[in-house]
Each structure stands twice: as structure tokens, then as C-alpha cells.
Image (cartoon, rainbow, N blue to C red; front, side, top):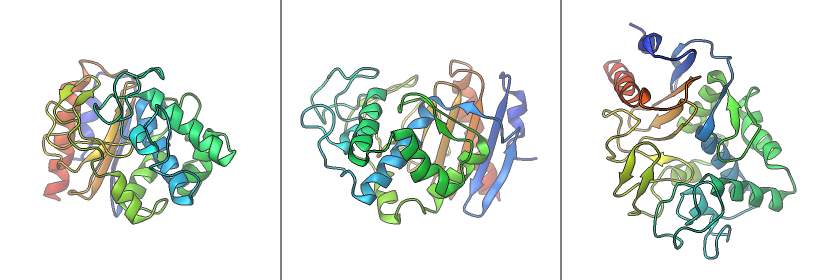
Amino acid sequence: MPILDSLSTWPVGSVSAAVITADGVADEFGDTSAVFALASVTKLLVAQAVLVAVEEGAVELDQEAGPPGATVAHLLAHASGLAFGTRDIEAPVGTRRIYSSAGFEVLADSVRDATGIEFADYLREAVCEPLGMTSTQLVGPAGHGAQSNVADLGRFVGDLLRPSVLSEELAGTARSVWFAGLDGFVPGYGKHRPNDWGLGCEIRSHKAPHWTGRRNSPQTFGHFGQSGTFLWVDPGLGAGCVVLTDRDFGAWAKPLWSDFNDIVVRSLTKN
């Protein structure tokens, strides 16, 4: 049975998905050209563009940005102390993992100021064009305002598995835990001690409950979005998965997402 067939039973109007390995697309479901709002999956794309700016020398990970004492790295790893949706300071820098969409707006502003290029254009030129992601656009805030399709995000997952936009060194650094030991909340899944995060991507570690599968390795990294979307890459499995839907995240998604991801991992492991 194809890996993604269980998606046909999901209580959504529309769903599109793909499983990607280092060899390419292993399976896909639905209209992979259909464009969906990504919500916070946007942060993966924005972080990648910020890291390109780091590699180009336009900004530095230890460059001051956001609240006094915070850096680009703090903002990418949700350790700056900024609030979720505003630039208010809720905690001292580096003391709590406060999930902040506003922090990604600060990052976008920092890259714009350093390069003189509007961030949506920078994202397109730095990430989308090199990967052939022709349907991906940042049309709103840098924390949650992108839209894309599975065809494009499959290319993005392929690049996360075999980096070409970033160097292997920086790509590996980005998916390691930054500011280890910080506690915090994963939206919709409660508080985790610790709440591990990389540079823009959530690190699965041993969190429970969680939106990835129980079979996903602790090194799995990615993001989910309130628009009913998620993307993960499991280095131990050598594969990744992207699912886009038209139904906002809620109680319906919690059991389905983790069970589905277990099916994906089990199917790939059998292969």
C-alpha cells in the first residue's frame, strides 16, 4: 500500500503530501501543485534565508538583534525573550524558550537592513530560485506569512537532506540544539523540559506528546503550522515528509498527525 494512502481518511477539504528521501520523491498524495498557506512552516524558509545571509557575511549569528543582549542566534532559536506576537520582552535573554513569531520579523528586518533588499525578495533570491521553488512566496509576516505547495517544499526537503543552499557545516549547526536546557511551550502541545530548538527548526528530542511520530528519531527537525501544515526531516531515517491541508490545526490533528508519521517511518524502515 502506498505510504500516504491513509491521508484519504483525514477530515479535511484538501490535502497534499510527499515523502522524500535522498534519492528523490518516494511517494506523493493529492495535487502537489496546489498552493496552501503555510502558517509557521514559514519559519523554516525564513530561517534558511537568514542562514544564507550569515554564510554571505551580511549578518552574523552572534550579531546583536532584538532585545538588548540578544543575537540573531537567540532570535532563530526562540531564546531572545520576545513575546509571541509582539516585540515586548517577556523574559531575560537566554533564560526561557518563548516561541516568538515577532522575533522572525526582527530577523527579516535585520537582513533587509544589512542587504538593502526587501526580505521577501531576499528569500526568493537566496532560497526559492536556487531550488526551483516557483510557487513559494512570502506574502505576509516573516513568522507565518508564506504560501507554497508540496512540489516546492519537496525540493526544500531534498535540500535539507543534501544541503546545497547552505554549506554542510552550517546546515548541521542549524539542526543541532541551541541554548540547551531551556524550558518552554510547543504551541498546542504544552510545556517541555527541555524544549529543544535549533536555528529556526524545532528539534524533536524526546518530547511527548508531539506532532511527529513516536518512531521518529530524536534528531528529527522541522515545524508545523496552525494552518494545518507540517514538515519534518529525520536524519536517522534519511527522509522527510511534508503535509499541507486546508483545515486549521486543532484537536482533530493531534492523534492523526503522530499516528500518520509513525506509519511513514514504519513504511520507510521496512523498505
